[in-house]
Length: 640
Image (tube, rainbow, N blue to C red; front, side):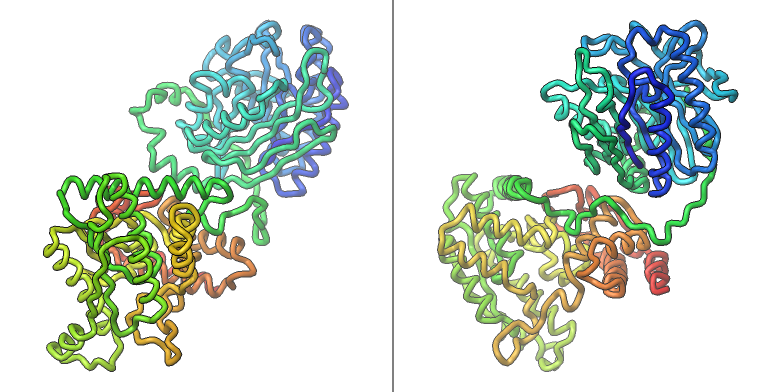
């Protein structure tokens, strides 16, 4: 999609049409599917009373005819603004042209009468037209209505003009509820202080409110500066996010281009049921008329995205990350504080391993205790060294608990697990699933029984990424009395702990926290290497968490199919992971995601943090015995 800001000559339709033609050629060569020009771009927006001149109106139609003929051998759909005379009135319109055809005319719904543009002086509002109106222009009979939806093979779009966006119920609200995926706005925005901020917010909010793409093109250099200046605002937004922005006050023509993910928008639309008959604007959608767009086959085999795709979609950038970390801390601690108060728990019991997840859970618990005015000694941290515990994680766990002033207990699980292996007849030299899970369940038993002993509540440490992969022992670390990390993905936990290290603790504790952040992720259930380093690294076994979190986001948030997620990942992680590596771990993700649902179906309570959650009570309802065959088959097909 593209928004163009041509250099206009006020009232010179021929010169303006030539400018538009050159931009059409360039956009078509770039593979742009829809190209949007500003309001009244054929004549110039600032003609004022020249709009009353018959010659200008006739020349505008002649120029439009030349554009229609020019488009005959082009694929790009072009939206151009012009004045159209009909039934003794003049309408401010957007014309849609492609392949030598004039496909439709959309008149402006609300003609503005504010100080910087008295449109009511020259133009009639769309309300003066009958429903399902048509007219003849450029020798073609075309639909003429503000309620046109142009529908193609892969997407549909609607149009509003200028001030339509700023009204209490913009036309785009009804158009998107009736099925338009993208809204194009041909506009003419006179520049005033703060105008850019207002426009960006309005466009972002409307695209989010309607779960649509929004392409906005406004006048720039060349318009009359008699009383106002036009800075050349152009924006492309998708579901609340700005994808492309023009440079203001440029004296040269501009074209901004970006892709809009229609599948993403349609998924959001289905989830929020925007077209539901219960919606207050449903009666308006019934009047919309569909205009079919010609099918144009395009070769997109070598297509590459121009818009950025976030490699770490759960992790904000820059200053937003600082704010996000603080907000998440309060969400987590608020949830735990309520649970502690409700259960009248005397203590909060946490298993401290020296790893990321238990560290975050401990810091959240301290924050909850501080908010409740409770003594830190009521937090009981239990370190439970086992067969795979390394000195590094053990020492970090002990130092962290002592520095934070909580109650410390150390209970080794080695002897209990060895006795258990003897009881069930398991060879302790066989480091299989039984060997690993017995340790995890022994630790959970210790925590649960210690909590009973001390009138406490076990705080769970498992995170969102582990829940997605089922990387937890059923009825082991899978279980707790309240899981504070259940809504936090692994890629974000590192940033959370680092932020807390830099903002909430003393220098000694900060040193420990930063070393924990730098420690390889491991359940430490297999004995260490001969040099005492961690042998069992989680990401070597299940794959890189940055890939899995990328997959998880697009599966949960957008419902994308494996083929699309693979394609996005290949472009996003080019240079970091090979396509074969991405396919391998994507297959692992889907296999585990389906197989491990039974663990998520009986999760402990825990707070939702972001837009993605796997709680079986709210966000993710999935049968534990659903087949993964469709998804795995498509992953297999990616080998070809």
